[in-house]
Image (cartoon, rainbow, N blue to C red):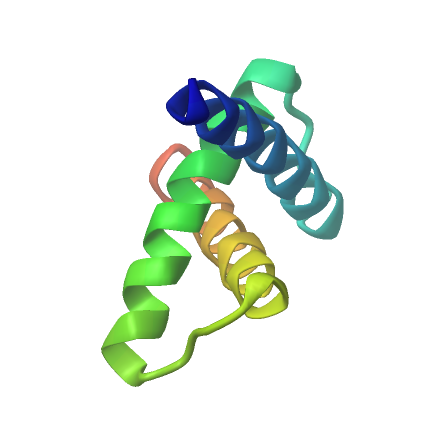
Length: 83
């Protein structure tokens, strides 16, 4: 039953992080897109933070997740730029 709570918290935090990154990057995306960006951003931010030795605690994890989601939005715009 604990895994269910962890999954629920990860989804909610992913949605929050995706929403915050979308606001920071002035991106227009719905709930599902923000959720996916937040989860992917958390994974990317945590991985990059671990590579350079940054991490530890909830606050730093959320900051890294937001930075990772912003990076994903930036890369998305570079790859799929509208002409």
